[in-house]
Each structure stands twice: as structure tokens, then as C-alpha cells.
Length: 600
Image 1 (tube, rainbow, N blue to C red):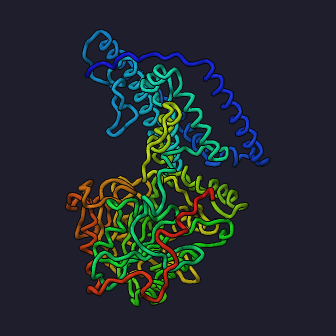
Image 2: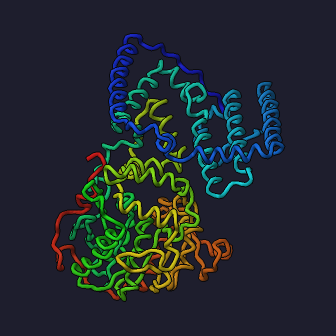
């Protein structure tokens, strides 16, 4: 590959630099004053100093590690030998010889995509030495024996957070792309980056709220969430949207979609070309979608029971009024699917069989292996969280966003640190990242119930372990046909954990494993021809056994699901227009609830 031309060095204008630094100093002073004014006098307590309860885990890891010094010495010797190989290979390259790398980035690691990471011997050495050290640290803590699973998971997770933060791509002098931009612009990129940093701090009122996309480039109902429809019902917790048909005839049985309230429903309706909602309408379904409220302090007492009664059950009643059809098919996505599972068990106990089939997108019912989100769930962290929610009555949307971003820190944190703060660039307009930044709050009563009963105590898998409105929940009593859609690279709802629902539900289950992750694996239209999926006529107890005997298919799982759901959709009837039934139109889709943002 050709070498990069030397940069044109631009000397900074001292007058402009002086003016910029004066403005930065003024803004910084205001931010510090505002930050200090909001500090809790109790913030020096141990729980406040370590709200994530990391210290105890690392103390335990250190104790176990020191108990086996020979193993630690062996790990250090392995690292030393790798460094000797790296020195030798670097010396060979400096003398013009070819040398195989000692360490290479994993496939898809975009931190080292700039050509100078490979072509320049110095930056190649920096890159490889980082990779060697990072992998040594992570393998060393993973090999510590005697840790319980929860502690080992926490140590591994936060070691990776540290390793990711220390990547040479995150620093000016060790990132060739940033260094070149700094020389060519006379440092203007860093000054602009500092302004971007202050903008984010001001937008977060002293808390860093990284701007991931041009938030002014999108408007709901204008260039995202475009599928035509009407809000036909609303209560304190949700608006119900009925979408306009695009076919002359529709299936007799309507389709109700229950998204998670941990984020907003329009992930299923970002753009026409990847909108699951639009596609489902085009298949001939009369589609209804629950649009959850972004709760304020006034809704702090809304419980998990409230979300069940005022969510799927109220929506089902409204669908009947709107269409005249008592029965419906239903989809639950992620947390919406967990709520749906509880609702179906509740309805089964009540002899209410109005739902004729249920589809679950990336849904956890068994929380034995809750994935990396389990790192954030223990008694100390839950007590801290509950104390935090006590005053306002809800969990801030920013807290939830930070948690999910940490699961993919290189993509959702550090890439923007480099782009926005080191390169001094504005983020690119991207609808998915706009949705990801459009946070929602969690009512205190509901969120506490969910975290404790599901994540911490895993009571949903226990027959009668959870009671809702005096009814003991038993998933084995759910006898209706179910289709489970999981994704192979899901970091929020690991597919093997979601697969266990095949053994919990009492009716026939069709399990589909899609490629990619929690979002891309679900939002995968047929036209994209991406990822692929797996099916199996049998559901053995072990997820690996299922996968080993599964059949692989190319493309999107959407048509496979449509083939399954059409069995339960009924005959065709004339298309239904929103407002023609027993419910009048309130407003146009996507409605007003979804437009409420956390800063409003």
C-alpha cells in the first residue's frame, strides 16, 4: 500500500486560540459551578462512592490471584515472551523486512482501520503492544479460580471497560489519524472538540451526554416513523396506534404489537425500507401498536401490574372496539415480550383466551443467564438505584442509556469520543442512533418490581413465583401457539437464555434464531438479504442441541414468520380504516406520547 503523504503543518493563529480558550474557560467555570451546586451532601457515603459495587469484586479477584503466585508469574512470562517477539518483528520491519504481526485486531474492530496503523512501524507497534496487553489482562482475570459466577462476570466486564478506555486510538499522540488532523489544522480540531465536549456537558446539565448523531436532522412523522396511521385510544400509560391498510383486504384477526417501554416503539418504523410495521401492514395485517408514555413523577406509583392492565389488556379491549373482533394475534418485543408472557399467564388463569397466537422478539423469561446486563444487578446496586429513584419517582433515561452504551463501549462511547472530541467533527445523521439517544424514563414502582423479581430473583420461571392482581403466574399454563424470534449475537437478551422459553411455555413453540444482534437481527427486511436465520422442527432441552440440528436459511426471517402467523390470522375481510369502528381518531400517528423527550 502507498505511504501516506506527510501532513501540511498549519501554525495556529494565537489571537483566535486565545479567544477560543477564553470562551472555553468561561463555559467551563459555569459548568463546574452548576455541577457543585447539585451535589448531594451524602455523596461521600460508601454506596455513593462505589454505586456499581465494583470494589468488592476486584478485591476478591486480587485475593484469589495472589493465592496462586506461580500462575501469575507464568502469565507475566507469557506476556514478556510476546513482547520480545513484537520487538523483534518491529526491528525487522524497520530494516525493511517483512514480519508477521504478533497480534491483530478482531474482525470488525474499527478502531484501527486507518492505514497508518498498519503501514507505519511505530503506530503498528503501539497497536500491537496494546492488543497484547489488553488480551493478557482479560485472560489473566478470566483464569482466576475460586470466584463465583457473578463476581467473575463483573471483574471481566469492568476489566474490558478499562481496556477499551485505554486504547491508543482514544489519545491524541497515539492515534495517527488524530495526530495528522492536529498538524494539518494547527490544533483547530482539538479546539472544536473541546467546544463539542462543553456542548455535551451543557446539554447533560453537567453530566456528559455524548451526541451520537445530528439530533436536529430528524423529526418524528416527518422523516422517521412515517407509516400512516391514527391514534385511536389512550390512557395514562400508552397511546394505541391503528395503521392505515395498504391492501383492499386484510386478515380477519388483528395484530397487536407491544414494544418495550425501556425505549420507543419507532425502532420498528424508522424508515419505509426497514419498517417492520409497514411491512406487516403490506402483508394484510390490521396492525395496532402500543406507544408507551415517557413517564414523569406523576406516574411514579405505576406498577408492573399497571403496565399489564393499562397496556396489553387495555389495548386488546380497544382493538375489539375498533375492529369488532374479539380475538387478536400479538407480538411482544424484549421487555414488552416479558410483559406479554406475564399477561398471557394472567389471562390463562382468568380463562381469557382472546389472544390466539403470541410472537416474542428477543424476549427473556428465564433470567438465569441474563447476559452482561446482570453485571448491574446485585443487592448493593439495586438499593442504590432505589434510593436514586426515591426523590423523583423515576429512573432518568440517561442512566438507562449509559448502561446499554457500556455494553458496546467501543461503538457507542469511544468512537464518538474520537470523532467529536479529538477529530472535532460533528456526528453523522443516523436514524438508528437518533432512536438510541431518544431515552425514556422508568417509573420507580415498576422498575423495582421488574429488576428484583425478574433479574435478581428469577421468579418468573417459578410456577406461582410472581402474583399480579392476586393471580399467581405460571408460564406452563400458556397453551396458545408461540413463535420465538431470537438473535445469535444479542448482548441484551442472549439467545440461549431466550431459548429456555421453549421449555417453559405450555403450548407449541416455533423457535427462529436470526443472525446479528438485538436490533439489527430484528429490523432486517427481506430486501436487505442479510444475516440469515435457523429453524428446527424440534425443541430439545439444550439450546446447543437445537442449533446443531437446525437448518440454515438465507435472508430475513420475516417471511418465515409471516408463513407461521398466517395460520392464525383468519380469512380475508374488507380493509379497515382507523376511526371507522367504535373508536374515533384522536390524532395522527406517531402520536404525541412518543414525542415527549426526557428533557421536556
